[in-house]
Length: 63
Ligand SMILES: [Zn+2]
Image (cartoon, rainbow, N blue to C red; front, side, top):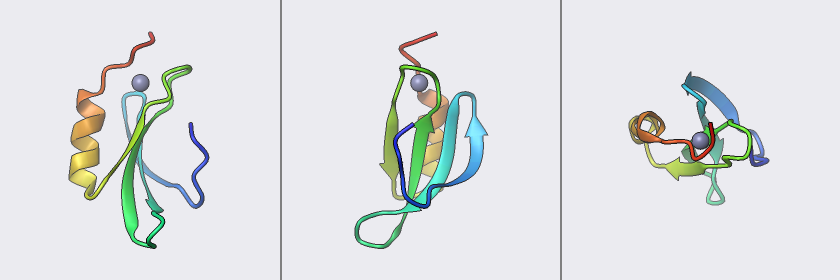
């Protein structure tokens, strides 16, 4: 899981955590972060809905 300042976890979908954090412009960004070992997938989205959709469709490369 990448180090994110002030990452605030909101919910979890499978191995993926959804949370919010401040992006570099100071706005709230919605992040989806996979917590599976050696996966390391993460992405930022402008809305929580988009982050949740990405979490549901994420396919881990590791099992
Ligand atoms: Zn994954």
